[in-house]
Image (cartoon, rainbow over all chains, first blue to last red; front, side, top):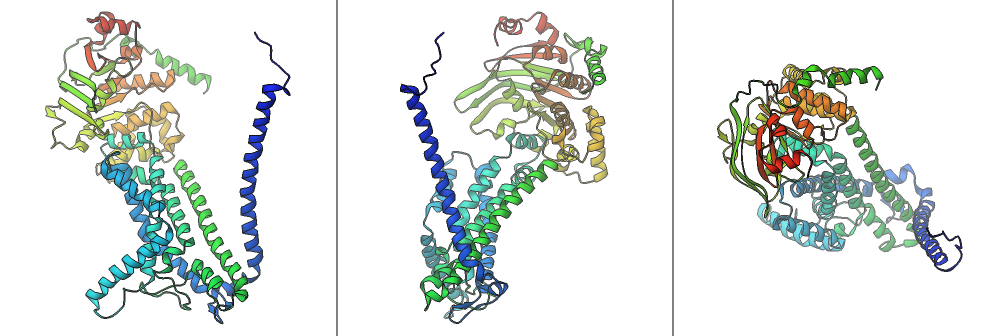
Length: 312
Length: 283
């Protein structure tokens, strides 16, 4: 048997050790850079924004050409748009995911087409959704509805919260589909087999085994979609977001203010950009808090559903 | 586990009743019972690969029929044709006949739900639902439309008793089934299969993942159940086949090589392949 060499500082062994140390050093540094970026971004926003973060700011409308006052309509507009979007995108996405994983033959042309469409949808730049929404929902569907129901009157054929929500829904659809499909895949096949072997139909098995088993994933997908939708601006630029609209939306045909769009407006369209800088910080902070809250609630919800399933 | 419990269970393994079953059937008369399930020239393909080749076999009522053979010989595949569980596999094609009580179960007009109600199944890996014990057992009857809580309670108790797990389950009916040990879970799965009141029970290596004591309990249970049910069991364990079954069928490379009374199969097989397998020359 050969002797072990302890001359670790020489030749090949030294080289190997050096490479190992360099590799762990470089990858560790890269990870540190990521953390640093997050810390810098978040802390600068909170440092700039916390002074204005008051109850008044959250509950009042913008005043004096949006150089003062609060962002109440933008918060409410964002929430309503997001809810409308979820109501449309989550069921459609969930049903699609169930179809893909439970009914479609894995490699059939149809299933592959759907998957290709979902992947394509996920890679389309968000501004393209905005333009599509304008062309399809506002100018084609909305206009068409007006021509049929109220000829000569513009009711649906202009940007509004419904078209904006639907456009945003298209953007978030792939997020829902992918996460729900992943969740369904975590339901053990033996449970599905057991259910079928007891005489359950495919639909009963989906209702009683697959959906309860993937509920946490469905909820996570929903919240991921919501937080994505709450943060995006481009899809609603031309389809319903309002530059300045002090009242909150009261009908599907209303336009609405939106936090993300409001930040854009404050920083580029204001008559006095310098005066709006503190407002920009605080608005950004509110938007971040909103998406953080949603993401954290996704995590909490998921773990609660999981532990509940375990305990049941 | 306490020592006293161990002793008790060891005694159970060696109970006289069990001992008589070793080496074949307790049915000393060996009188043929009516045929419950039969297949004729059954071929099964997974895509281009043929997994079963012209299997013709009769399974008798209220007997335990064991399928033995090396891995990949088609015994589990064959078992799964009897309740059409292969239907869910993409690219699976079947020709030939599977007759249960005189009805071709691959007739397109046949209701698969009705078939699976009558032909229950227990899987290799115990697979209780992540629900309560009660919910697990009541799953089948509820799926089949039973809503009456009292009736369901009755079915749950009866099934758990039949599967010899009532004593362990009765105080925790509404606790998660996942709190059970592997052997208990498997008996729970048997109770779940019994709850739909089947006539035939298919068992796909039901004890292969269990320790010897749990295995003995399952075997004892099979012995009890054959009074009321037709049981078909796939097993890798030849001693198990010898202990629990009345009839043994030997599969090799998708073909049914030999079938006969378990005692004859193990003492005096007709075919050389069977003898080679049983004596451990391959497998």
